[in-house]
Every structure is written in C-alpha cells, then in structure tokens.
Length: 298
Ligand code: ADP
Ligand code: MG
Image 1 (tube, rainbow, N blue to C red):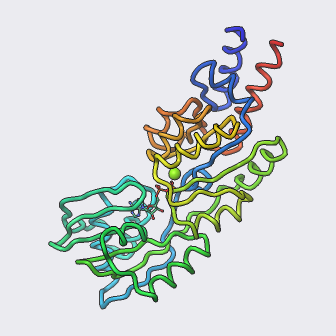
Image 2 (image 1 turned 120 degrees about the horizontal axis):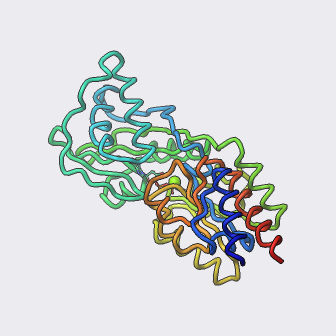
C-alpha cells in the first residue's frame, strides 16, 4: 500500500464521518467476512424506555421508583438512564426532588447493580444477578419475564431486602437501518452475528427482527472477545461493532474493531474505526472504502 493511497482513503473516510485510525484498519476492512454486532446501542437505538412496571408487593409505585432510581443514578448504563427518567415522570412535578441517598453502590457489569438505600439492600438487574444473590424468583415473576422477553423487551428485576418486589419492562427499538444493513452485508458474502449481555429470550427476539441467525446472549465482556477468537480460528476475518465498555475486549481482539460514535469513550479508544455518525450503514461505507483504496493501487 502506498502511503498516499492510505492518506486519501482515510481522508475520504473522515469526510464521511468514518474515522479510520491507521493504514492497517483500512487495509483489513475489505477482507472482513464475519461481523459481530453488539445489541444494545449498536443494533438498537440505545435509548431504551420503560414501557411497563409490575409490582408484586404492597409498595407504592413512587416508593418503588425512589428506591430504584436512588441506586440507578450511580450507573452510566443506558438502561439506568431510562429507569431514572421514568422515575422522574412518576414523581411528576416533584420530578426535580432528590432521590434517597444510596451507599455501598456496586456495579456488576452485564448483570446490574446493588446499593443500600434507606438501610435496605436494593438489587436491580437480570436473572443472573438475582440467582447469584439467592433471591427467589416466583413462577408468576418468571412468566412475566418470559412474556416480556418474547416481545423483544428487557425485563429488569428489582429486589428489596432480599425479596423480589417488581419487574420493569424496557423497550429499545431496532435502528431503522439495522435490517437492511444485515441483508446488504449478506449479499456481500459477509455473515452477521449478534452478541449481547442481555438475556436469551430478548436476544433471540431482536435477532429474528433484524435477520441474524447466530446469537450469543448473556455474554460477559471476555465471552464477547472469545467469540471473536473462535470465529478467527474457523478462518473468519472478523469485524466487531460495539458501543460499550463491555465491548472493548472484543473490539481489541477483532481484526477490525468498529465503535459507534455515540458510544463510551473506552469503546472508541479500543476501536480501529469510529463510526462518528453512529449510523450502522457506515460499516458498509468502511468496507467499500477499503476495497476502493486497495483496488486503486493494484
Ligand atoms: P449489551 O451487551 O446488549 O450492550 P450489557 O452487557 O450492557 O448489554 O447488559 C446486559 C444486561 O445486564 C442488561 O440487559 C440488564 O439486564 C443488565 N444490566 C446491566 N446494567 C444494568 C443497570 N444499570 N441496571 C439494570 N440492569 C442492568
Ligand atoms: Mg452495547
């Protein structure tokens, strides 16, 4: 590759909002034949909204959301933002009121969080978090959770003082272009795979909507990176597209790591290419640019 060709290629990319960090990434992109997409914030809009709340105990909605919001204000996660925003709505004109104080806040990546609010242990997160903390999930709760997931929504469980008190259903719609991007990639002989920290039910429902057949759900950050390596072992040149801290090991492991511009700084740092406009179709722009750049010099 001539340095000039690479400079022109990266320059064209930059003008289109595709930031390519160096010649190696530009060179590799054209060879990609497997793309792993993260779900939340990558295939989906990443602006989740609370759509339903189910309470099991004799607890007022505003008291429930006070406890949950007190814990979630400490989190950067998109789901946390959705919950806090909804809690403000529940509070109505008192929306600016301060949440109760939370102490001993612990974030459990990919599972949720814990805090002590009003001297009560509050846990907010997925099944795994509840199972690991020995919080029983009733059959009624499990049924609601399954239904929520079949609708491609994420069900967030809340426990207070060791008891499951509610489920929050959160919806995060697909990005409008997601389906088309996957289908265009397929016509380019590039296979799409989805990895997510979210549960299998929601993950499968979203995958079906977007037209992806291979799914890895309930994946920890290291497991996302393992999937990259597994595909590489099977002969794939792998691109990883993600937005979160939990995607960074996979972004580093991939032949080409692509970060969503609206994503976290850590993901942007870990990536070789940054999609500044956060448009999924720019995954294709990057591949095309690489093809054109390296065709020109041949
Ligand atoms: P993804 O890989 O799709 O971007 P994450 O790994 O960030 O998803 O999160 C996986 C799951 O962990 C979420 O679907 C949710 O159930 C739970 N979770 C993570 N962070 C939080 C939080 N702040 N509050 C509640 N649940 C959370
Ligand atoms: Mg994500």
